[in-house]
Image (tube, rainbow, N blue to C red; front, top):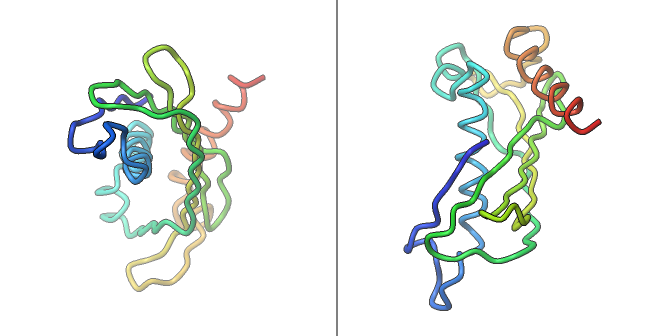
Length: 140
């Protein structure tokens, strides 16, 4: 779980969090998820993995405002050889869902060529699969 406190600059003239910030919070939560799995973005780049976003979706359920504390649950929904899909569930202090989203990422080497993480970086692949399996167990 990742926690973010809504900053004043993240709100619009109406005092509501601007929609673009939810995507930023997804990235913050993804960075946190990877660090907790032992694979920070810095480490990934050091071992030769670049992981660009290939798709992002965001469904706004309820608005947030300045000083709200948002908890972002980020987990691997699907880990495949060349891509990973991460799901994000954002809730407010009461536990009410305020936003749901997903992002997909592929894996490239330093030359921009696709890599198969299951073959080329099996430890990283296993960490992503483990996260997906742990979440699936919690759901059942």
